Length: 197
Picture (tube, rainbow, N blue to C red):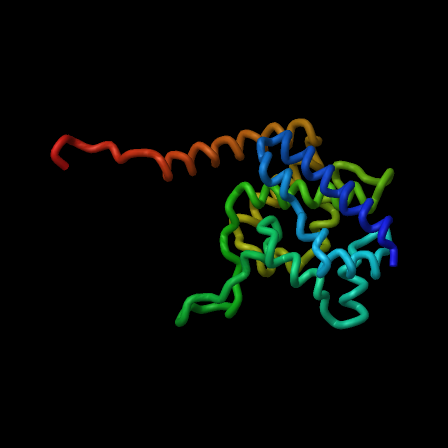
């Protein structure tokens, strides 16, 4: 059991995501990111299968054929596209299980999560292109994730690789602010109409 090492790794990861989320205005998501990793279901698996250079969930999956930690985690954290997998409507053509469109703020948190994971595992080998290069290897993401959510994630990852963190985070902050204003208007805005309507 690598209790200390696993605790330090997930805490460092959370700190990186929190800092990034704060930079783009996602304060609550920065504070609550990956808290389920401290639950016994996830933490004990992480400590048992800790490797230091990749997710312990992969090692559990290799041994058991599934990861109890991952199944617990993806069902409680909305920044994972797997949280948004649902069945298709009866009579619709295509696969039975499909990706639902993710709210923008969770796609941005997913983006921050991928940056932090690459920084944690790649250490001094990390570059702004690392998350994009890692993402390109994940064909299952492209196959299942909602096309609009995937397009936004791709755009952010490519922008990071080509234009750097400062410019990409500024762009992400604008997206988050516009999305927040749009959601507030839907919740609190009154429909404009003529008197008597």
